[in-house]
Length: 271
Image (cartoon, helix red, strand yellow):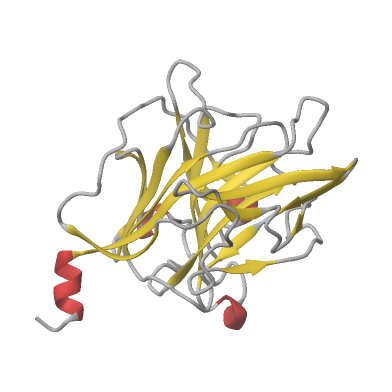
């Protein structure tokens, strides 16, 4: 979850649509359960603590139900709070050690928070991060938003030689000043051996391939990745909250789904 450098804005909209028939669902969390229940511990674990997370962020991530819970209506709530002036808490969930995916369609249907200094994200990290470190493990940011840009989201990849402020990405903007905080949208990537495609509500807006990378750098997207969901507060990209920022702020996640292409499933099954 790092700031992209190559950012280009387009203004497109499309209705939310189901994944095409050639995708087969292989993993999902629909966040069904009673209000106040924790995220499914068989699927998600928590990052906890403070320290800026490499981006000068201000929040402390917790595993408290104050910051992450089911709402009883089929949504996961990740809530950024301000328990005292200058203090912020939130949640960062990940499937590390529980689930990782190599290639496929990875999507989440979400309603985003908004406000200066608020930084929601849906992203992936290479499963070998503890062995090889970042950015050698690779990172795919399926969706990032900085709250002062309520109509825009970003899709980005990071790897060795093109990470942090040099990440390779583009942005997608809603028309007519519509805000991602006003309704649910589906954010997805379709990832194969040949590249990563970024989509919002079924609209393709960016494709990155090995040819997109700076000369002499490595394509690090040919191994499994785990999933992450979080809402950061402050940081080097969004800046800090100010007097206009209202707390609490919630990101609602209706579902996270992973699909495999039928042709790949057949290959994996040896057909």
